[in-house]
Length: 471
Ligand code: HEM
Image 1 (tube, rainbow, N blue to C red):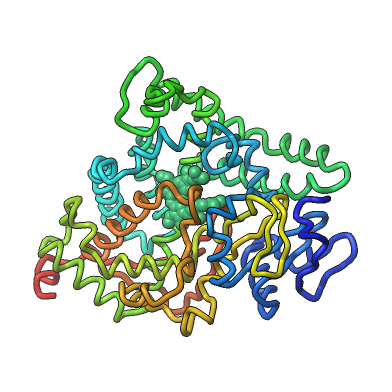
Image 2 (cartoon, protein in one colour):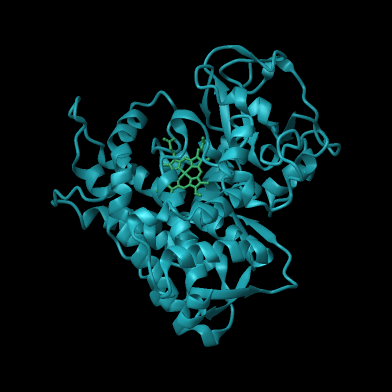
């Protein structure tokens, strides 16, 4: 039986299906996720797309998501596009199969690097990096508006490389993004395309051609990873993620990560750990620029906690006190989950929703763009309203109706890191700067590794101490 056969069951699909290519015409190459979501409207709680030989089954309701998030019955699955990333990220945390021993080992070794006390040690790095970005902006005020997604990506990349690998990428010394970003985006996009072409007759040859065409990007990534590791070999430091990976043995088994796996993990953290957060920050800034009442509430919270000095930075404990700003972040990730979905497969043969028979070979993709707007749960789902995340309102909602960080054992290991960084950056940015978006700008979303606003600019104006005090 073919993978994802669902016992031969057919699901609703968009109307333009053609022989051989299936629903390919429905999928816009430059924005596949958004076009697939658009095409799914009106198809019901579960639908499918066939692209060439690949079949994808999606769910879009909180009810089905809750069932798929039951860890006793379901676990993470790797759809072909994610599976293809294994060419680069192997059995690194994100792309490992559930049964691979390196997932368990890396998970157990690295969880301590994401505890609250570890966050405390990253806090000064986050503060320093955000201050550098703000200084960089102040030096360039005369250059006009800033490209928000570009600069948020610089910021989150720099925070990650400094906290995880103690490495300064020099992002604020040049206007351009670090070449790693372009190489990584190309390499992973190539991986995704290889995932699709491999399902075709002669697909391996096409995949090989793609590999050859983009070899210089992967060579660049390889040399960067080698260099990153080489500068630390011989040292027994354990103060950051790389130190733990190189030098810490499992307390019970004594096992350590193998060098090849360390390379996979570094790439995984570089990929999973920066654009996800930069997208979340950029969407949050977009909604703040568009909603003056929300901005006023967020700013008054920041001013109250940080005081009169517009350049003040918070202590570690203060970050959790930005409750409204945290709700702004949560609401932005609801409307635009920067990781748009995750896949789940049954541990054993089962029946989903008392109706759909599934074997361990079948998987369903939770479409967060649909689940986070499920009208059965979310009232007026397109409206930006951070107060949906007031504790009383959260309690009223069914569990698993909001899953931007995934589910269960394989959910996001960097969740606290991302939230701490994003809340800190939002609070200090709106404390230090006033900003204005282009009123004529309509949100456009680009799909790279994750979802990011495209062409979104803000004109910044530093706030004076007297202005903050008066507020
Ligand atoms: C707003 C920011 C972020 C979002 C929305 C996000 C989202 C997610 C989601 C949905 C998954 C699960 C994917 C699946 O089930 O297939 C995941 C896994 C993962 N994330 Fe994040 N993430 C964010 C930030 C981060 C950061 C900052 C790091 C690292 C510092 C990170 C590292 C990882 C890793 C390593 C995994 C794989 C975990 C495993 O399977 O053991 N993420 N993330």
